[in-house]
Length: 413
View (cartoon, helix red, strand yellow):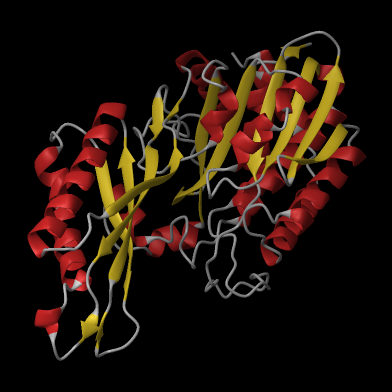
């Protein structure tokens, strides 16, 4: 038997203006904006919310947008979409490719805003079917981990009310039409670490008069690869990536310093602390072994928390998604190593559900090499790839996931 929430969701989304939403998506994709510069995107979203009857505010936390629709007594549900793009040069060849040099919606946030717009408009138009308060949040700066915290610090809940439940979703690689859910840990913590190696510069012809920080940095990069393989238990999941190494200015100059940028992905705080301790120890040891004149500088930078779904909230959303989309569309893939700042909206207390919507076009998936799901996932363009191009067929289903998720918690007539 189909639940009341599922029936209402199907009714409210039966006549979605798909062509209009696809046009909105193409427009957002053509005009990507980096973190905390999402001015045009924010105006677009705010205009659509006002047109649907929401009390709307802009500039929350910088460039954030909040819409509130009060519809009688009942729970308050918050739907969130992130809005920022990435410093990536697009290589999709799409007719609606980015017009901003070196900037691209390579993570699907343009699709997220489109989904949120469609869901807000559908729920507003169908307000006779539910009661409660709907909060719609267009969040800036997810990619830098700043946006959620900035909106909270700017009085998000003091100004618009504290929600009872938070809901969010993310475009992901995989054959379009699947809705992965995890009732617990779904995404990992992320920690950036910067290391400065101090050497003694000089002429390339007289290395004996220098302490070469490039060689030290090279040893450091190699040794860091043993942190996960030799210091983390096999049953734990962790990743250490050296994302950048910089040193020097000319062929024949030994520089005075080298800089290394790391990213750690962890699924427990003890593992994160152990990795940070290992990074500090290895950096100090390699610099000591090289005779560096100063100890290295090790600085912990941006940090994203683990995303841990409330089991009850996720179960409620997963159940209604299974009803709306049919058997086999909802499954538990286990936690991913990607990271989000969405949990910062929860303040450590508000229950939330966060899930994925697979968006790889059918023909791309079918042509990808490999006979297993992991092999194909490794072959298709993923988030942050210059070739990432979600299928437009996911516009309507992505709206439906948010609408049905919201109705699982709002008071449905």
